Length: 511
Image (cartoon, rainbow, N blue to C red; front, top):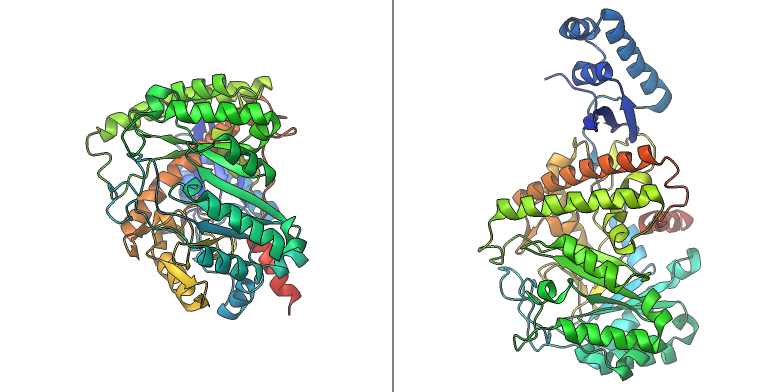
């Protein structure tokens, strides 16, 4: 089959657009050019003219073909479809050097216990390949060893970049181990005083244990705290319940009000919210609640969906009906968001939901498509974050299961195993090599992990969803920018640092 031009055509409100994979540009095009792009391959000019002669004049088709050649010459775009080889950018020796000196984020899994029993939780027992809640916790000896392990491996990133250091506490519910957390911070400050000021401290909590003393201790260390809150009581309490089965919303909200009364500035700037969207979807009501309850809040609102794979959670829902409901509500919120941007107003929680959708398009780099690319959205294992479980084992990240260890704090990183995982993951991405959305793909290991292996079938399902969402993002970006061209001049988008590029620079400096 002859190759076609590497592009994605789509319509926005009756206007034709082309996303050109070769140059990474989005172009407003005429209908004749859109039709020519469906057939032209640089060797079949007369054939394309004959194919389209019933719709356009010969001159119109030839002008469109000339436009293709001009754009190719000037921007390197409208290339023929090609396979892009996915490859990890470092060899083993280089990566070992990075793991020995370039770590920036330590996460301690201080407990696998929780005082909640959220029904959609991956540790609830409804997920086939995940652990259940249990009483396992990290000992002080393991926490101390993990801190020492990390502190011995971050000197290069401090010396060669502007990046600071981070330490996060994870669970279960991490505040069940508050004393261990405080002891870890005291140890870090007393043992590494010259680096302590470089640290940012983070925690994800269900918010139920935020009493006055705990709040003041967290403020002392300037923690950035993510609190799980799914919306008003009738929505939140559907799934987020105490171990006893009792509702949790009022307890969380009371504690948040206490925190705000103790330090309004800390509450406004250091508190983030994690909002899980679950069926039956009432997303509009959730956004309305967040707007009303937190009108001046400056922290992040992180929205996520319940993981649909390998779980019994969705068994009693009609999947098609729930998808229609969610899409209808999202369309309504998207219209509200676009109006927000055009008018210059800012509903913060709504902006947080759509923020990444726009930033992935607006902040893209306009360079020619390479022959070799870094695989999708995977993070460099161990480098971007060091996740240490209660037993001292190192893992790819805190969000996955524990079936993919990459070392131990006593023996160090297992680089051979890391590269094995990367190779196994790349094998699931065979359809990525000539996918039009390859430059926007942020799918990571989690989109392919099933039990103790990487699943090609699971990856393909997520790929289909990713392409659909990427196209939706492009359309929304065009809708916003076409109605208000200067909307991104005073952008609410945030600049992101790229640890891969920083690592490249460091490796080059060592040669």
